[in-house]
Image (cartoon, rainbow, N blue to C red; front, side, top):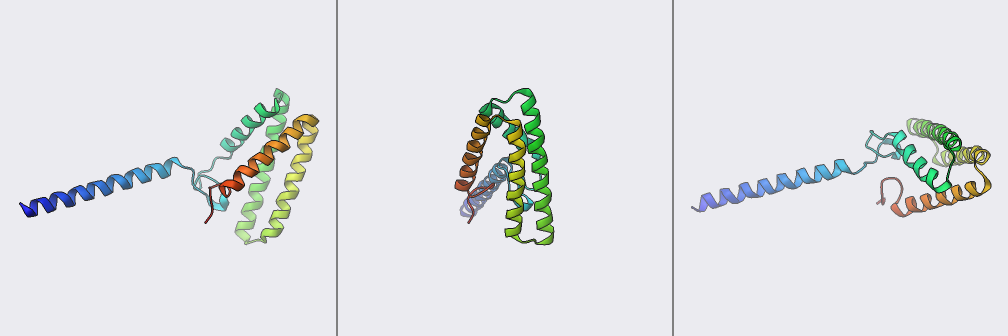
Length: 149
């Protein structure tokens, strides 16, 4: 009887650990993972989903007309692609982070100039506020993927 009890306990422990591992794997699949270059999605990051989410926030927050929405989407999409390519070039070449930071800032400034031409003064001021709030949220989380250790 004693051997049977030990076998039963061992099987129960094995079953419990297997279920726990399955649950953790399922939770990890549900949460976005950091991909190469700091992007989300473990290599499966879809930029269109990111841009759609940003456009939803901007359309509501800035009360964009249909024409403005189209132009803002084009500007943001082009800017996103340009920054993505620059990040990839830096990662491939092991580039200078400070130079990259300056280049990214110049790209953001250029994008802001294009947006200024499309948005009213009030909309652009609100856009800058939305961007500042987004940066603050990211700073508090430690970037795209959450707190950094």
